[in-house]
Image 1 (cartoon, helix red, strand yellow):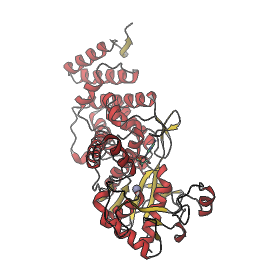
Image 2 (image 1 turned 180 degrees about the horizontal axis):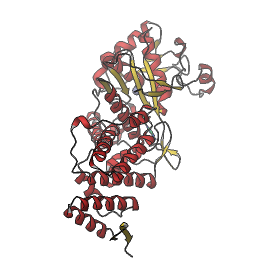
Image 3 (image 1 turned 90 degrees about the horizontal axis):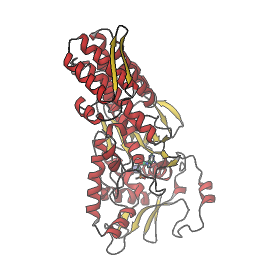
Image 4 (image 1 turned 90 degrees about the vertical axis):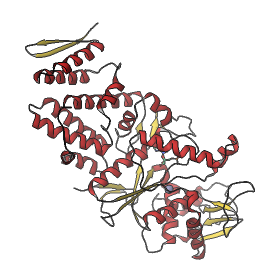
Length: 460
Ligand code: AMP
Ligand code: ZN
């Protein structure tokens, strides 16, 4: 079974083949920890978590690294405003980020390197870039010289001439080319900094990922992912640094980027002022609903966030959990939990999560129309195994059902409950049948048993 991924570098879908099938490597640029993650920031974490799960299904060992950017001008600025020490801010928001992601069902990364713990690696890489003529010192800064790397601009499909022409007038005068970017910058007295051959200072953002991915995953990594806003300049600069520091060795084999989460078609971003933080959202919407909503669009497409998206995700989960409850009596062993070919094909096709959700909906219908327990058993096993790949349906049934109490039922949910009640009665499980009747009554639904089956209507 193959996995195809759209590679931003080659601009086409490619068959994924790892460099070493016994050790697949994946790197995702992680958060800058000075404030809460918004639901747009959660999109890469969640969609690439599905990729991580899919890779783990196919390969024995996957090493997934997601870094923590804990040194950055925005963190320094936040500390200056609030007076809270930098370490306290970064520790607090690292914990909050990890709690939020855990709530969204994101598996923890195998390695979570922090930038501040990798100064020697960054300093060594910068020194090497200077030595080989790819970087230069200027006015206490160290800059990468973009003209020293002929492939600069290839990922983003931009030429140096365009960059020169598009450069603003106020380019810092210590730069030889307007596209040159900072590898090291000076820190003022009292500002956070580390000793280096170029004076006390701190690294630029891009060098962090080059140094940490090489240190933990090796010079060549299989998959590097992030949002499309990172293609330029961040990932373009990572390529320039890593390829020049390790000449002749490819840096990344598949570049994979997610599209934006928007609100009324505007990118969700702090600078736009339209952010919904995961921390706030999950107080009023179950985090599994948030996760399903994030997976309801294919990851490269834009996803417009609104109440309908959330409501649809809620309805889908209600339906799946209600159906699972109707087959609660079927006990499955771990070995039986294998996803079907159709599910693997959907996810293997550049993570087509909308199609994967449609496959899960089909399995729900199969359970509901099945005429015997063997059929139900196979469909339940496939549904749960598909859920595992998507990071869904892993809650104890009761937790979900408690969560949906008091919510009006959709007609699909009512149909699922009515079918479940019919099964319960057929199996002489009258206690369960009565519970369902009560649940329907509580939701103002009246049922009537007739020769044609159970009829229902809303009470006025
Ligand atoms: P930032 O904190 O801006 O560096 O973003 C962290 C991650 O979230 C990066 O991979 C960004 O590409 C991604 N990201 C930020 N905003 C959005 C958005 N509105 N939609 C999707 N991804 C986003
Ligand atoms: Zn990065």
